[in-house]
Every structure is written in C-alpha cells, then in structure tokens.
Image 1 (cartoon, rainbow, N blue to C red):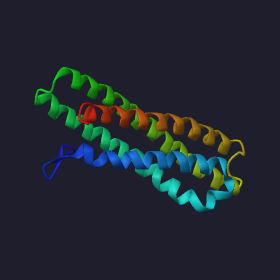
Image 2: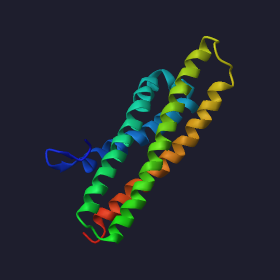
Image 3: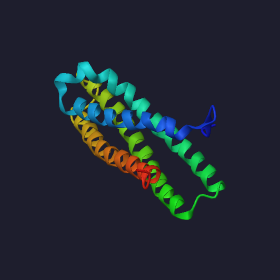
Length: 159
C-alpha cells in the first residue's frame, strides 16, 4: 500500500509532509501553551496539526519500511542498508514522539478550554504544557536526525 504511486516510491513523496507538519506542530503547540494571548488565534491550527503531524510521520515510517524492503530485495550494499536501518530507527522514534506530542497537544487544548469553564483543576493545563514542551523538543530533535540521516544516505558522494 505504501510502496509506489504511479511507479514512484511513496517514501520520498510523503516525507516532506512530516518535515513540514512536525516542526509546525512543535512551534505552534509550544506557543499555544506558553503564550496564552495567542490561543484564540492558533488553537485551530494546533488541533489540525495534532492530527496531521502524527499521521504524516506514520505514513513516512510505513512507506520507509516498504522502501527498505525493496532496496534489500534489490541487493543494495550492506553499508547503505546499515545507514538506512539507522534512519529507520530515528523515524520510528520520531513517530512515537510526534504521536505523544499530538496527544498531549490535544489534551492541552482540552484542558485550557475546560479550565475556562471550571471543569478541570487549574494545575492540569501547565502539566500538559510541560509535556508538550518535552515531546516538542524530542520531536524537533528526531525530525532533524531522521531527515539528516536520510539525506546523508541519498546525497553522500553525489555532489
């Protein structure tokens, strides 16, 4: 399912969605949490990205696994396959950190809107904001590591 689109490998086509959506979610979710005056303006974007970023990283992860199977079957050299395995490991962690970020961002949105109505304790929103910062930093680091390791495999020795 995630192998090809019209004869082209899916992975290089979809990774760019994760490369864009994950950092946007990091920035906007942290901004939402620490800058309350902007919440009304960016809450909708945080909600949309809390779904889109983990979905994009999942599709990139699954399509990457398919591409690795194809390259292994084609007999690519072991050093390249080792680099790809490292890249895949980063991508797997990126998915989990981004999923955690998406869930905690959603909980942060919920807690700040529910807090206004007095339905949740006042300490809950700062806890979710702290978790968003932690998952945000981890997601930002791993989106860089994943992208850089993938680019190294593709472009090392090309230019």
